[in-house]
Length: 253
Image 1 (cartoon, rainbow, N blue to C red):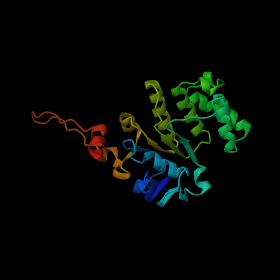
Image 2: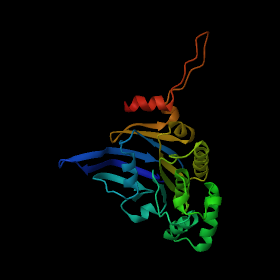
Image 3: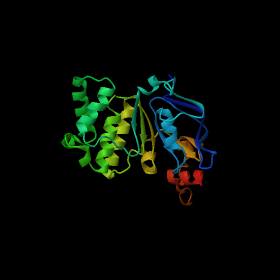
């Protein structure tokens, strides 16, 4: 089985202020197996969104190769199996939530009959059934995040790329997102997401990669990266384990 994501020696440069070049990614290599939930972590400016934009075909790499399901990301066919939620979802505010899902579904060639069922299913999944026929202009930040996630899932993608999916959500909204991600994994889908909510990452991810200044500084399963605690033995006190937050700070400092 091919990996959902394969990135090899990826370099992305942007023009600098004085005619030079700024490297956003410096030879990044990583792989994500199909069916995994992969947490892509890093401080602001580390290159996380740049990596996602290369995978989505929004920008072209300066060097290196990126593939989705063995297809080069520069080929349009590579992106047919993707759903994407940006960090700040923004769309046509004059549409209703239901109309947005219909528009997205039609772009993927879904029939009206399929879209009727799919829209109802997704609106229930993200808890927006009662707001389905309201204009997006009336939606709160959290509601826009949830309808954006529904839009990302409209084509039943095999790979879901989420940039800060819990941004702007209250605790109940974050729990719902966790449940959706877990359900996607149970169906064999791959989820690749960035988040500053490290406690959320600890709960749902199979593997994590930590990016700093365009370089991958750590990668692996949570148990491989974060030190477990030790129980009390022979009168000695227990040793507390390391949290993902502590490990993250240690790796990017």
